Image 1 (tube, rainbow, N blue to C red):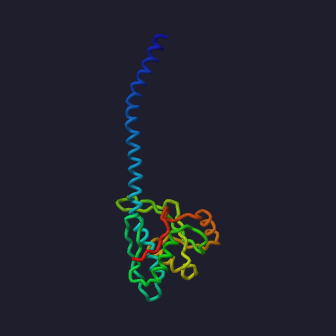
Image 2 (cartoon, rainbow, N blue to C red):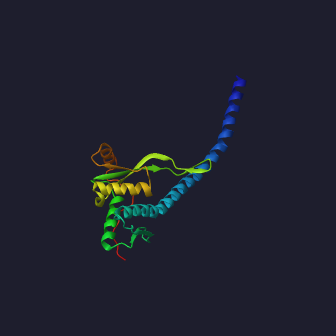
Length: 207
């Protein structure tokens, strides 16, 4: 019995001697983990804000290319950040009529999925990972759905937009009619959603 009591006392002492430093380390680790978590969120938000101009420029370039007539050079694109957090998209060497048409198309492209005739399905790529010294992009399994602007609602115009998108941005993007099987699925799962998240609709500003 004495041996049993001594053994129990020793066991409890060992547990308490291990638990005390562990609790101390845990109390130190929790604030560090919290700081790391919020730092990661801040860095992600910073990267996201820097990615917006790049994404807008890429999308605007695709629209400008798709809207150019045969034998006509597409207009240039300039994207600048403004003090209020918005971004100004300027169409270089474009007439007022073309600028308004492209601006409306870009606003609809980054706007919510509603009743547009065609939808663009783009697989989302994860951040690049290193593989044998090379940067490799891996697909995440998620998709972004862009509504094709009504200015490109004709089949030939939508096909032209798809060709420019595949050539300039992502060859894996696909085009689907809203009444097709895939189109109905995409519309039901992404209805009212914006492909770039919280990006608000664009407004025309003349300067």
